[in-house]
Length: 428
Image (cartoon, rainbow, N blue to C red; front, side, top):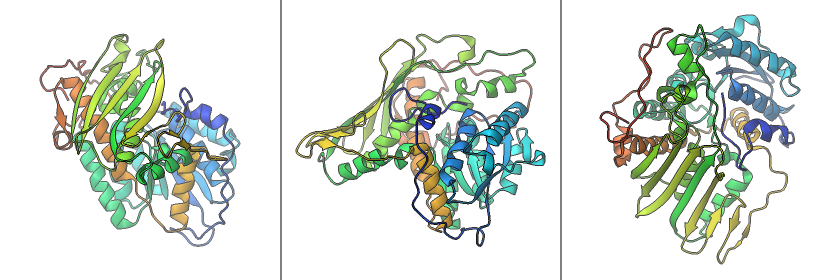
C-alpha cells in the first residue's frame, strides 16, 4: 500500500524515514498502563502492505530502548503480504530485535483482523481505508489501544461508526493516535500555536493543495477473482479508497480544520479523468478542485491532482487579517513575521508513535478519532460534490445512507462500479 507524502514536497514516507535520525526520547520507562512492571506491549499489525510494514518500522524506532514492545501478530487478506512483512520485520535493524511473530500468529483472510485484535494489546491498522470503520469499531469494542492510518472511512455510514467508536474509546480510557502526522510534527505544532495566538489575526481564507504526480495502479492478473483484483488495486475503487481526494488530500484538509478549529458547512467542487482512463484506474478521478465554506463566510480553496508532468505543490497556506502563513517554509508575514525554526525535529512518522506509546505507559490517554473523522468527512463531502456536480452540506455528507462497503464481502464475483459522472443519479 502506498502512504501519504511527508510535509516536504516529493518525499514519501519511506524516503523520509531513510533520511531521518533515530527518535530522541529523553524519558525514562514508566509503568505500563495495561500491565505491571516491564511487561511487554504486544503490537499487532492489520494490513501488511508497504504502509503497514512502514508503520511497524516506525513504531519500533519510536520504542527504541525506552518502551518495551514486540511485534506480536500480523494479518492481511493475502498470504504473500504477511510473509513479506514478517521477512522485513525479522531483518530490519529497527525491528528485528522486536519481532516475536510466530507462524501461528500470522493470520490470512478477510476475517484475520479479529484474530490480531484478540491476541494483542496495541493494534495498528494499515488496511485500505474502506475496512477501517469495521476494524476501528472492533478494536475499541475489545478495549485495545489503537493506531489507525488515515483516512478512517470513505463514506457517511463509516464516519458515523468512527464517531461512535470515539465516544466509546474515551469512555474506556483508550489511547488512539491516527496517521495525520502533521499533528505530531514540531514545525506544524509551533505554527498552529502562533496562528491560534493571533499571529496573523483573524483567519479570512486559506488554500490547501496536494498537486502531485501519478499514483500506482495494478493491472488485473490471471487467477485473480473480482474481489481480489479490487482489493489488490484498492486505490482505484471507491469502496476501498474513497479516491485520492479522501485518501491523500485529507492531510492538507486536516491542517485547515486544525487552524480554523471547526469543520466546513458546505462544499462545491468539480473533478474528472482527463489523463488516466485506463481500465485499472477503476473509478478514480485524476484531478479535483473544491471550494469549502466555513462558518463566518470563510472559504478555503482545495486542489488535488495526480498527473505527471505538471507543477507539483503539496502545501497549505492560511491567510489572516494581519498576515499569512505557509507550510512550504513555515514562514509568517505581517507584524509577527518570521520563520518557525525547529532544531533536531523528529521524523513525524516516528513521533506519532512516540506520542502514542508515551500516552499508554504514562496512563494519560489521548484520542484523535473525532478530529480525524471530521477531516475525513470534509474530504468525503468534497468528493461527493465533485462526483455529483452538486453542492453538498456537512449534514448531507454525515447523514448519507449510501454505504459503499459490500455486504457480505466474500471472495468471488463483484461487478465494478461505474465511473462517476457529474449530473448523474445516485452518485456520491
